[in-house]
Image (cartoon, rainbow, N blue to C red; front, side, top):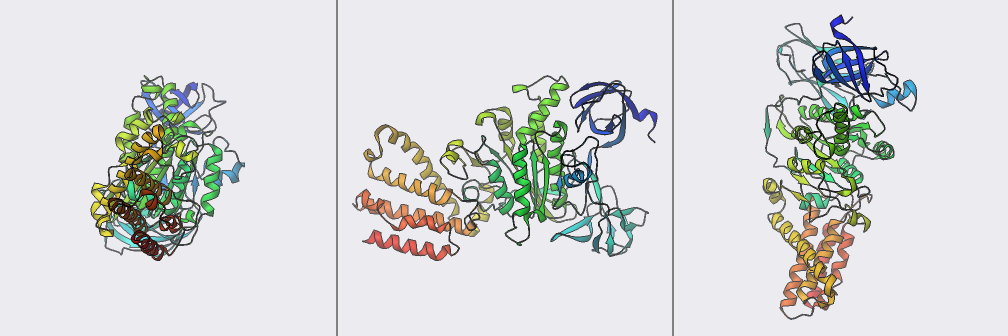
Length: 575
């Protein structure tokens, strides 16, 4: 029974934001509202009035109903059973809720984040007498092909008095310390608080995505942050799904934050069918999905981003590289705007709260590559989609995101209309990670950086020349510029375009990426050399071997094909 001081009465109801009187609660405490015990969180304390954001539909609530505080902040359960799960924004398992009340989530429904009945085979990694401190690994559990490392929960330390192998539920103790404390496989963590690490590392190792435009021109580091802004229909969701499938992260956390129901349905139907290219197992075996669609309560949407990043940090602490896909942070910002307006706070630009930039920075700051408390190296890479209204990149969410991310992948509706996918605009996108990762890429090829710089130079020159072409036509251009336009077109069509649904072209290794760049630049060198020796431009443009480059994308034996193409090109140029 809660003490009377932990209870209050509803005083005012305004959508998902309610006010209680006589409640003795702290900021961010979790509370239960009304007869149905709706979950909510304290977001403002003003003398005897406490403002609460409720994570569920508040229709039917009325002043006078009771409100009770739990005395704890919103926290989620972490342990075996997270992978292959589908949660809502506050870690209620959606399949479990469906069993209780059907397809629509009824108010007041709750279910634990982790299955209480399932037994897991625990194998001890520590022994009696070992020191156990916060974050140290005491044992392992096999979780769908991933080794789930059981760590000492925060705040506990001592010498191990007893530890045993066996089959346990998440609530049963697997280890006992000399001070009497028991360690279970499950731990809880408040979602708004970043998990501790020993130290952060420099972002100098790339997160290989298998997408040529990202890996070559705009790479992201492990532990890095990237934003994909783009208008409706430009391919944000497909890009994020490709990244989830092919990026060399060991665990994927996908947060569908405020997306339309039909888009989230596609993700929920697609992901279980996708197979992991490395293991051949379903991709869901190393994925956690958090679905909070636009018709779900707005307050839970605001919490969903924190739930996702906390799960990502938990797997990072085990020593895994984790990729977090947030789709989309714009809907998260809109949830903050709605709650802020109900609190009658002073609005900032376009009605967003004045603290929008701070919240975005706090979220992205939780990414990083680090040495964890267990001494292992882990990383959380965050890729956030931004959905600016009408594709306007000058709006506040995009601009404030730009201040904190180091890789910016701008999607272009015009490229999508021309069926150029991924529709990343190479002129407005950028990555600030390239310099730090130069050493890693130079191990693949010493001239990797110079190849990228040359290709970017050709694409920028094409943009300048196209303005002239619109005025006078391409035939009026000098021969050298006509050849530059052809090389740029080859770069766009043969190199930057990539078919996300083709079994071979969906993933391109760094080595294949380099070889394709090198072959295009070899054609460029031969073309300019032939032109300087007096060959007419039309003859150079008629070289047939270069057109076979498009076939390389779809061939498994690309090395042989590229070598043959290069030999044919050189032969045609000699003739």
